[in-house]
Image 1 (cartoon, rainbow, N blue to C red):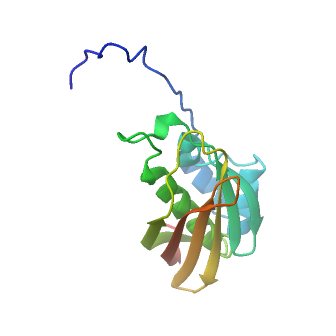
Image 2: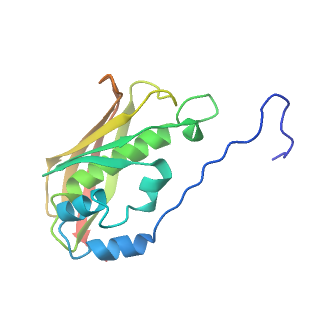
Length: 172
């Protein structure tokens, strides 16, 4: 790639990201049931995972088989055509469907997505405001769990939906 900047672009913008040791977070949560672990992250007792800090995800609500996260996207997540990259929304839906399942898991149990189907309904821009993503378990299971998620804008307009299948397994 060329390091020459076309005229009129102005100076480059910067975003600094800091995070904590993810293995320390995982170790701290290993002896906790999933809901208690999520609550400890929300309450600042345990450091959030790095991905939450990259996008500035915040836990807004935690229930039994449900979670809500919030994020305010900015232009650092833009794609080349001037809107927020779908990967941010997909990551948000991956997070809320996984964390919803996690709230129902006993200590020493983890999960991994088998499948995540995302439908994008409206574009997201840096001025879209604070987005809310809700995830909920549709069918818990000992080996496979199923969840759904949705992302809405501040006016309540539906921006994206997801369905997910997650493998439930002993933590390694």
